[in-house]
Image 1 (cartoon, rainbow, N blue to C red):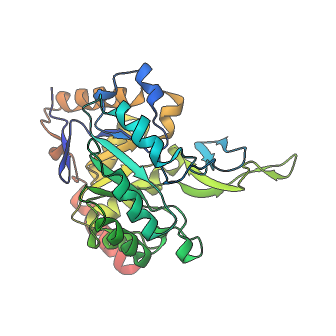
Image 2 (image 1 turned 90 degrees about the vertical axis):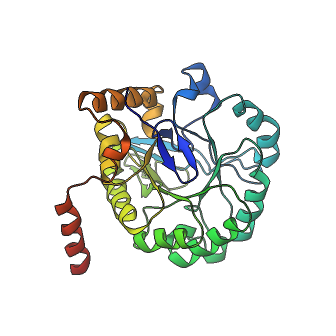
Length: 313
């Protein structure tokens, strides 16, 4: 067997495959051994209980799906009393995704979830910032740096910043997160979109707009992963449209040290196990002993072309 382990800052994962937040739940324990995957990334929690957005919340589209779930949450007390004891039975690192409306609220929540058994915090800074007229924190370098500094001052746990693909400044945002103390970047969340029912002439989502996920957004997420991996020294975790071994390899070659699988898990709940097995077999067949022989190995001429493209743009 090949060595599939990978380091994300202070954490060592037994393999690079983990779920994307919001696509993974306790129910999957009845489907496969949850300790087989690299890490457990929980659905985003908030300090308060939330019911989420109006229905319908999900609609299928060619190449993926739109969702406007609205981060329903049972709150921090439920997490401490029920969720944390459940996940304590597993050895895979537990990554808690959090969301809040202001930098101060993020810091307070980070302190509350910095508990024994929590290995890292994933800050969902793709959510609306009430201090910036509802724009996502990760839309700008300034708001990214402010919220990540608040988080870094609130916890000693590793911090992963989950970025948005809806910004025009992905490199600057990534660098701001790194400068403010992020230990890793998750690149990226869903792409903002919408769909309309032509018979009723109503939006297909109750919230009108939602996040596009699935294979259709993979080229965007892959491009951002490549850009961010070249621009920062901290690890990048690729996320967006990953469903096959080829997808995993593309992200690793582009510079990601691990990947998150989201929408495909809804279609095939055991997809993460299949990806781990397929990656192991692929590496063994080629005599590749470790992931370091794959990560960031995109052809040198691609980097040169990217430099020229960046200068020209």
